[in-house]
Image 1 (cartoon, rainbow, N blue to C red):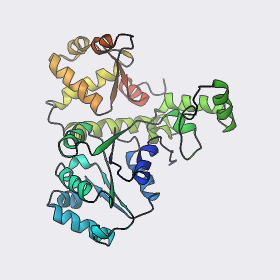
Image 2: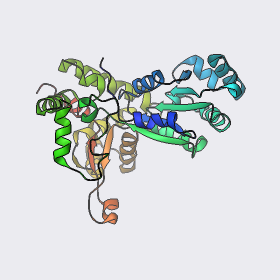
Image 3: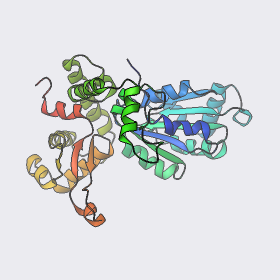
Length: 324
């Protein structure tokens, strides 16, 4: 499978270049490429790398224990006492929200060995992760949000893809166009990328499929995994079937103003329940609520936002319009 140079590389590079860099917390929906990005960054790290996984029983038992056990395991993995580390080591913790007790141990490591160990964590259940981060790692974390592929990431052949106008004090369309064409990104390549994005969605694995049926199965499996794992981990969700119904209705209203009353009348749930479920969908990166764009800041706050699927694949899955 092709690997893309993601824009969030810039955030992780701060762990290399900034002496007092904060913990990088990578948030995003399942399957957007968080683990791939962490693996790519780890491969480029000049020092030693230690990796833990929240879904792994051995790591779960270790990080639920006392700090002394965690420190001993780290030293065994690194082959040297933490106090004697010369080049900074990288600690990666994937799906850290599965082990709430880990946050206190991460806090100690960051406070005591900040110059010896750099930390990057990731999670797909952002509500759980953000809650534990606020309680234990407040002021110590930089949040990096990861979304499905951007066209810039798809079309760029550079190691560090960034918008072409970032380094320009004055936006010049002619210069940007010349730069794009010089990199071989003609109209044909852009049209092909857009067509594929519309048909297959922008989740990396789905985007690289050649069959609409395979893409459909990927989103179907994603939907099932999201409902069975992430949603069941949230205590805020009362009935999973009701939540699933709101999930489907929310994606079917893609591009429209968010109207809680209409959704309430369709699903037959209490107003506050629907509002809570919509907030969970937004916090878990399944939908995006776009605020009203007006001159008045007050109106932006009170006017209904528009609701968008975070990816076209979700929209196609909910409406079952693959190949139509």
